[in-house]
Length: 252
Ligand SMILES: C[S@@+](CC[C@H](N)C(=O)[O-])C[C@H]1O[C@@H](n2cnc3c(N)ncnc32)[C@H](O)[C@@H]1O
Image 1 (cartoon, rainbow, N blue to C red):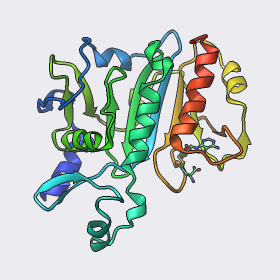
Image 2 (cartoon, helix red, strand yellow):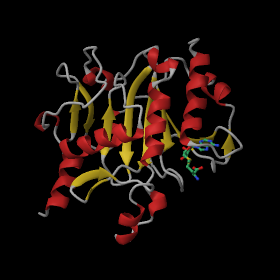
Image 3 (cartoon, helix red, strand yellow):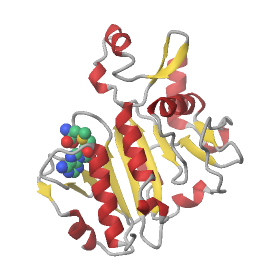
Image 4 (cartoon, rainbow, N blue to C red):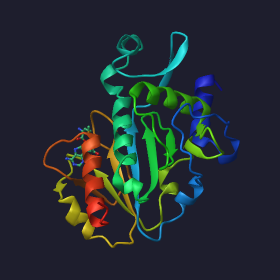
């Protein structure tokens, strides 16, 4: 098996106990966290996010591995017959900041967060992580994750990010309502009302695209909705979800 194939297989099938230990390069959370607990079905509702089609791909450019992006690697990508416009890890960075910085997360309502990459790698992100705020540092951290398959806190055994087994459905709570988000969905909803219609204790899973073009293509959602009559950035679509949930849960 070639090195590339081996890494892909490792990324897809990594077993929880076979992870290499690495250290997050910055801003690691200090609170002790048991990520496994967040995988248990929630009995008090809560929300899960899945970011689909995320453009997170590391490649050796010159001497070092780098996270491919349209600004820094346009020539490299064209040379390898790839479309630079498809390489937008900044969308995932912004989406993660929007979710993790939300009052809803601060209130402890974010129960699970997953990123599914265009290259079919599934990443579990600890809701307590403090993701790097600058894009450059975010890229550095994601390259580290894609190579080592896990990022641990600097000050303890907590896993802040790790590559996990697929499919994502095995990590989602039983009885959840799984809602896909797309501008091209036939149904445009007022999200606040839509959420109010579900039972308070029903866990909600929102599936948002982290790509620049196209739409999410997944078979595990119960519904596909548009939350605006306008095409939004992933970050704005997420802001709508967070605001609606905060209002529903009286989080000020
Ligand atoms: C930059 S958009 C992707 C562009 C793609 N043409 C589209 O509109 O689906 C990123 C993601 O934001 C979400 N999104 C954008 N506009 C939306 C809308 N009006 N309603 C619901 N979700 C939306 C979708 O999940 C989408 O995949």
